[in-house]
Structures are given as structure tokens and as C-alpha cells.
Image 1 (cartoon, one colour):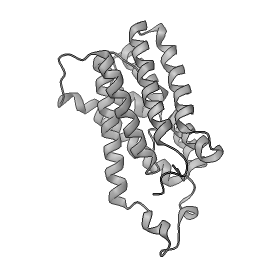
Image 2 (cartoon, helix red, strand yellow):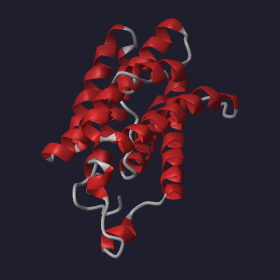
Image 3 (cartoon, one colour):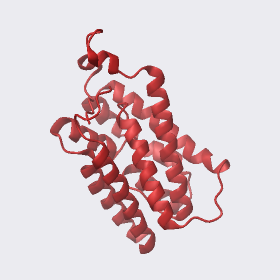
Image 4 (cartoon, one colour):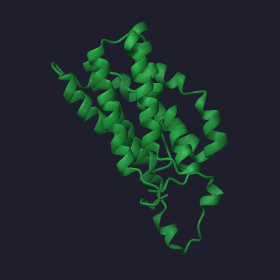
Length: 217
């Protein structure tokens, strides 16, 4: 699957070319960014309910949320701010702006969502499996529309676009590393379920996010 993350000028095809017909419109981008952010926000609510973690900047935000009690969404939004400079320089303004919008929507949805959804009981194994697949699906929506959720996702997509290293491999390595660092704060059982969720999400991306497979841009 292709993830063309170069500048907008380099992506501009001739109006009559087949690639032009495959370009995503603004409405398509908007629904994909909203849907992807919504899927991941549901994952964050499941993980918070089950006491699980995830990787990248979201994992760091979860740890700070558990320790300080501050809202996850606000922490997640602030932690991602330094990554936008790298994204702007390496990935271009279109990708950076879409990522900023996606991160902002996720931060808002994750903090507001519990007002609309309440789960009395949630098995952590179910949360890990369902959450891993939902997060993988959400990230795939975003990646196919030149967006991400910041942090390690920016780095993994850049490495795939620049060097052909699959985003799923990089994401798995980073996510599992962050989750394992949580052993000092979170019980081992919850960390194990969190690692399972990270592996499920990353394998999903590894299989689905192949360079050259997806032609929309």
C-alpha cells in the first residue's frame, strides 16, 4: 500500500490522469479523519476502563493520566506538540495539518466520550483484542488519507515512505517498548494485556498497510 507523504506539489497529477481520479476529496478526507479518530477514541475509553496502556505518545499520556489524574486528552494533545515540527519538515504541511486535526479530535473525543458511554464490566482480554483491532483500523483510515496520530506514528510512516520499512514493524517495536516501561507503574497482568493489544494492532497494520497496494491519495 502506498503512503505518499511528499509535498502537495509533488503529488499533483494531471487532471486527466488515472491518479487524478483516485485523489481523495475534502469530504472523503474529513470523514476518514473523523472516523479514524473516533475508532481510536473508543479504544482509549476501553483501555482506560480496563486499566490497559498503549504505545507511543498515547502510552506516555496514559501513564501520566494514571499518575496525576489529569485528563488523558489534554495530556495527549500537549505531548504531541513537539512532533509537528518534524512532521512539517519531513512530511509536508498537508500531512502535518491533518495530523494536528486528528490529534485534536482524538483528544476531545477521548475526554468527552465517557459522558456518552458507560461500561459496567469489561474483560481486559476483550479490551485488548477489540481495542487493538479498532486502533489499527483507525490508524489505517488516517494513514490512507495522509494523516496520523502524531508521535511514533509520524516516525513510522516517514520511515516507510523514505526507506520502505513497513510502518507496522516500527510501530510494534516502539509500542511494545513503551508498554514494557510501564511495568514500574501498572500491574504485570495489565501490561501483558497491553502488549497483546499492541501486537494485534501492529500485525493488523503490518498486513494491511503495504506499500504499493493502495492507490488513493
